[in-house]
Image (cartoon, rainbow, N blue to C red; front, side, top):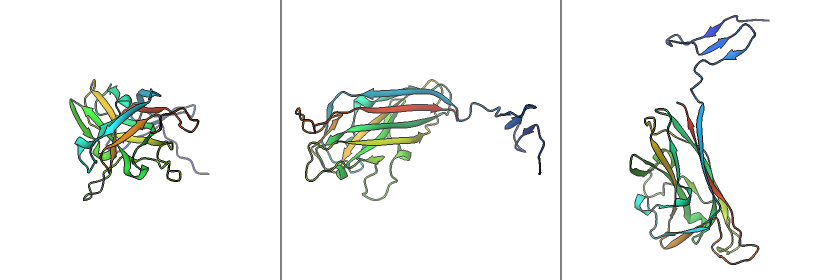
Length: 209
C-alpha cells in the first residue's frame, strides 16, 4: 500500500495552505470563507394578484412586467460575493403557456435591468428568457390549469461592494400583447374545486467568492 505523508497542501504560487492535516487525521480548509453561505433571504407569498401584460416582450426591457409581490432585497455583507437564486412561481396566464415566460432582473444602485447571464443569449429575434412557463395545458382549457415554474440554483455575480442593496425581481413576459398573468391563482376566479390557489417564493443566498 502506498502512502503520502504531509502536513499541508499548498499551490506553488499561493501564500497560504489550501488544505491542512492534523495529527489526529482531520482535514481542514483554512480559507473557510470561500464558498460559504453568508446569509439567506426569502420572500414567500400566497396572496393572489393579477399583472397586466400590455405589450409583447420582443426583447424590449420596457415590456417586462414585474411580479412585485416577489421582489426580494438582499444587502451584501462582503465585496464581490455571489447571489444564489432559487424559487418558484405558481399561477396561470391568459395566454397559452408556450407564449408565456419569465425574466430575472436585478435592481442595483438605482438601475433595473435583466440579468443577461441568466437569460438566453442574443440571437436575432428569438425571445431571451430565463424560463418559459411550465406547461399546464389540459385539452383546450386555459382558465383552470395553473402550473409551477421553478428557478433552481441560478448564480448571479454582480461584482459589488459590501453593504449594497440588491433587489432580485421576477418579470412576466409574453409573446402576445394585452394578456394577464395571475399569480397564485387560476385565470377563472370562482369557487370550484379545480380553480386552485397556490404559493410562490424567491430565496436568495449570499455566497462568499
